[in-house]
Amino acid sequence: MDNRPIGIFDSGVGGLTVAKEIYRALPNESTIYLGDTARIPYGPRSPDIIIRFSHQIVSFLITQNVKAIIVACSTASALALASLKKSFSIPLYGMIETTTQSASLATKNGHIAVIGTKGTINSHAFKNCLTRLNPNHKILEQACPLLVPVIEEGIFDGPILTQILSKYLFPLQTFKPDTLILGCTHYPLIASAISQFFSNDPTLINPGEALASSLIESLPEKLRAKSCPKPIHQYYTTDKPEYFNRIAEQFLPHHHFPTKQISI
Ligand code: DGL
Figure (spheres, rainbow, N blue to C red):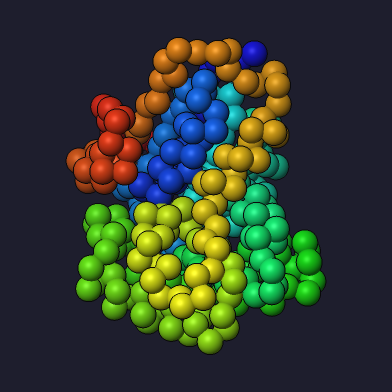
């Protein structure tokens, strides 16, 4: 039994979609969330930069005495997880494998679409993993670089979002995916706007849900918290917390956000 917190990080608010699922799936666990808001977005940056940022964040979280770390950012999972695993011995969990396993189980016709940041899509991390699971899957990938900045502005619906989504999602409509991977942890915040673009109602795969339900099984017994009446959830950002708090409060309305700004 281990009552230390689990570390969770993302470039901004997107990882809260993962945190929310972890709070639900593992209700005894305390957490420390870091949103690297000073350096968001990660999506357009080159792999070596994402690797450097991710190493800095993992080093910081380790100083906070976390027992495991969730890389709650698909871009960092795609580009930096392998390097993090080589450098750090702490258990690290990323977004790619569990999400693709869920998608592979969900699809009936084998047509799986993946949307994500430029970094994630250019890495083909989801596609490669899906192909390893089943070489017969047909996979269409689409980068959606404008979505993260719009979501970080707190825009979850309305005409601006519809226009941006049309640009990215129209090319997917003829492919008729029955399963759509929300391959960026920000995207579950706009899941209902995304579903409206498809007449065939594809199953949307939320990376946070996929990871949290697999953690119920895979978090080693010795790392689990004792039954705890009140787990503590702490939040850090690398820029002023105001914007982060505004969106976080909408998304997790019963939580308190005494978010602290730190430099790493
Ligand atoms: N939530 C991050 C992801 O899952 C967003 C990356 C970004 O900052 O562009 O990829």
